[in-house]
Image 1 (cartoon, rainbow, N blue to C red):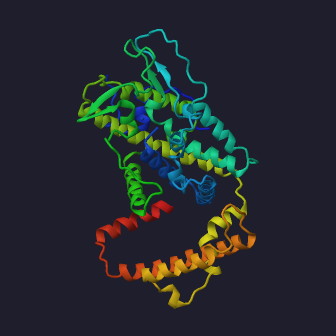
Image 2 (image 1 turned 90 degrees about the vertical axis):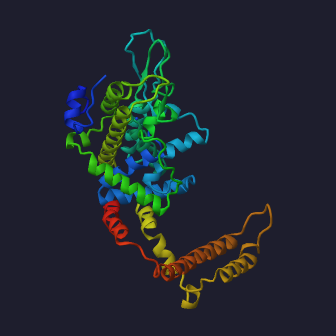
Image 3 (image 1 turned 60 degrees about the vertical axis):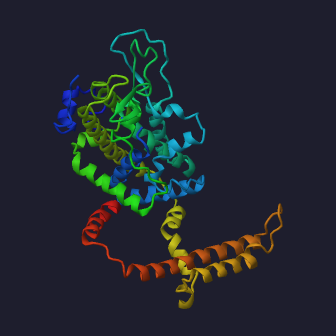
Length: 408
């Protein structure tokens, strides 16, 4: 266990160890989906090749189990625990925070602290991932929640509730505090969730290649900007992380905040630096933790082979003459599919009746063949179109430089 685990570090010491001097302002952040994906992207880059393959294969099974099409990989599944709330599943609501009281006025507090919280749930998910006999479904449930909640613990305002005469029942991690950031009214908590940058980009999941590239480029910037010693990158004791974030909330999130007032430019700049640093450090730590946990998890060979070989199997199974592979007239393609619908999709179908095994087998063969043929045709069409498109050298160089990092 790293030497710093469990220590209560004074802010000045933590600043010397963790952050650049520009970040360490001592005078008197659950990230939004983008923040969670950035943290998970950074974590994924820390995994060794074997563990990357494991988590990628597990994530593919997880995406199909719902199905959860918006969570096709570990990075995008980092938002799944918030998706659950949108589906009106509230039983897990307290999993995202641990609002330890901050009571500078020493008022009488009567509110109970949730006993099921981000710390206890993270510990439970870690314990679940150490159960090597658990079925894949339970392992997937555990890592999908851990990736999100471990990130939440690095957001200072997920670890605190400030009590005062104005907020005798606590401010719920800044959720009860409305401030102005520029011309916008915003909850203090939401400001930190959004990395203190105003409205973050709203990526549509599953992410397009353009959005994946943009996310990776932002992760590159964070990793180049924020550096941490190994002792901090490998600190994964969730209670120690909670105490660390709580300290940042007391010393960084609240000073300079007056409910209803406009936040200063100095506050917003400090907020952004701290939020980005916390997010980046969380990614390092999550990657270290997952490397440790995944090393003892067995993913059966059939699951790994299915993950490795799905496209290869289709290409090996379904062969087409060149004349069909290069047919890209969309009207002809439509007529072809229409014919398959008439002759394959409808015959043997009676509303309300059970489909025969023969129908299902035929359906699978035709669907796979159509999908494979569509891939051939799209590749041929794109080759034709892209050959006449000019992409400037700066864009190509940025792509070449970033691409290896994503798979590394």
